[in-house]
Image (cartoon, rainbow, N blue to C red; front, side):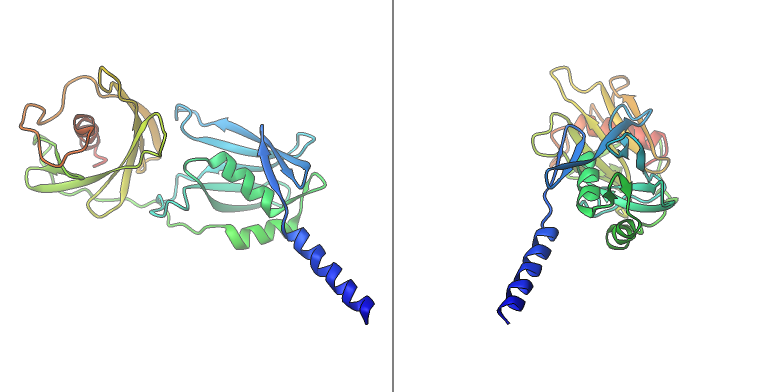
Length: 264
């Protein structure tokens, strides 16, 4: 009887240890319980100025196991926990699935997701673990949709009040400060009045103001650098509106560009 109790205790303890795997990620290498199991390769996406990237998971021999690319054909999630959607291709199993990776650390999120899942065993993908990961963690986001803009007069001033973007008395959009704590660049999100996010932008304000900003438009999934230093903005000479953002002139310039190019 005593032996059975001891054996049961050992089995339970062994199970707990197996479940409590320690996953570390340093210098591009995933380490599980003190053993290096895989490497992460970051590949900058062309045309995004380094803001986005694709990721590869290689075994320790350098053979590709998983490729993750940003899935721009899905509508951006309103849940910050989902972050960016990525399409994972598990090369040896032929499976493809969509996963959410953190907006503020997609590389580490990629490493953590695959490291904790235990999909790599003896330098190969384990089919059962891949199936389990897909069943538990994959996403089923809505496909990117076409959106209709509200009626507007393209010759009217663009103004901002509180978090609203206005033309006359008509609200044509909304903006939101999404700058992470401690970031050296400001980040903003632009939406239609319905709440559909149409663009995200980052810029760095200096003594001379803002000259260039990076704008990603969700309608076409394009990231580009835009020069907003020339031409001023609609309404710059008007009386300052109440309740405006600290970057009111930059916000108006970006909004003007979005309106002109039919994103807002």
